[in-house]
Image 1 (cartoon, rainbow, N blue to C red):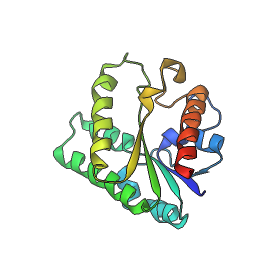
Image 2: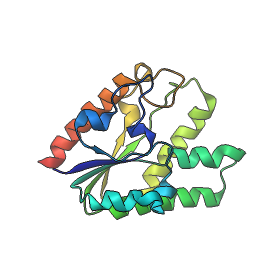
Image 3: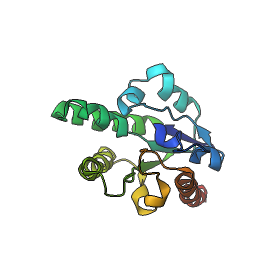
Length: 179
C-alpha cells in the first residue's frame, strides 16, 4: 500500500523532540509545518500536486489548525475566513480522491486549562467535519485517545508518547483499510 500523510505540523513536530507519527508508521510524510489548508488548496510550492503525484492508496490529512489560528490574529473570524477554510479543506481532500482518506481532528493540548482552546477547538473540529460532508472520508478524532499525558502543557503539538499513540491508532485503521 502506498500511504502518505499531508498537512500541517501535527504530523511533523514532536513537543520536546522525537519521531513524528508518520515516520513511526513508515509512511511518506509530506506535512509542512505552519501550512494552511488554503496554501495546500492553492498548490503553494507544488505541495498538492506533489502529493497527487504519489498516487497514494491512503492519504491521512491534518489541516485547518493554522488557517483558524491565522484568522484569529485580529480577534475576529470573519465569514469569508470561515468559508475560505472550509472550501480549502474540501478542495484538498477532493484532490486526493480516489485514495481512501483519513482526516485527523485535533485534541486539546492544554487539557481544558486554556479558555481560548476550550472555545476554539470544538469549533475548529466542527469546521473540519463540515468541510468533509458528502466526501468519502474517515474522520479520526484524536481527542478520543490523546489526553494530558500526550502533551507537555505548553506546546500545541503532541509529545513523543502522543505521536506514538497517534501512530498506534492509525496503524489499526490502516490495517482495516488495507483489508
